Amino acid sequence: MSLKDSLELIRTVRPEAGTAMLDHEIMAERASSLGEAERQVAKTIAALSAAAATDGRTHRLAEAQRAVWQYFVQRELCGFRRHADVIRDLRIPAEVLNGLGASHTLRRS
Image (cartoon, rainbow, N blue to C red; front, side):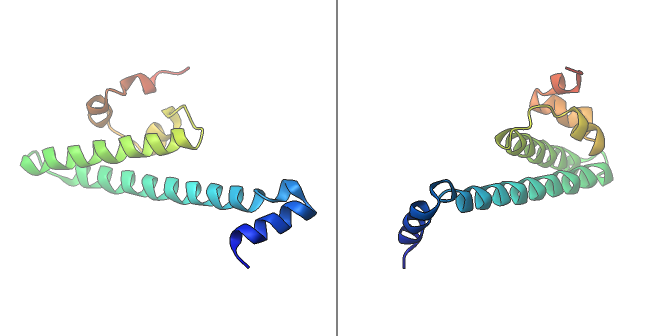
């Protein structure tokens, strides 16, 4: 039996359950992606903090900015629009946020 056939059978018995399984899988994937994006932010912020004021720091800053931008996009796809709490909790430096043009996220709404 194919997935399509299975979903048709589920809809016949309980129409609302036809998409519940898929909705659950989508939510689980979003949560997993968000967790991975947060780990990347923590990793790149730690690397930036450890980098000396050299050319390597410029590269680390760019990596951190990219990771934070991706994290914010992922959060917004999950419905989280305010980032002030995670900026504080992850200790994202202003220099990273300034590179995103996201310094407005520090204001309380």
